[in-house]
Image (cartoon, rainbow, N blue to C red; front, side, top):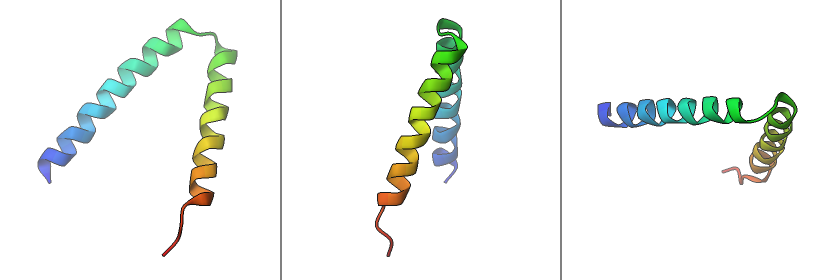
Length: 52
């Protein structure tokens, strides 16, 4: 269980580094558009997921 938590921590750190680099490379409007697209995709996945 501890190894799983460390794995999530490492992925979170790497994701934060990647996102901060992306944020510096793009303008604010592009980031908002990408975030909106991500939210639509996540919403669609949640709605299409089968329920037990």
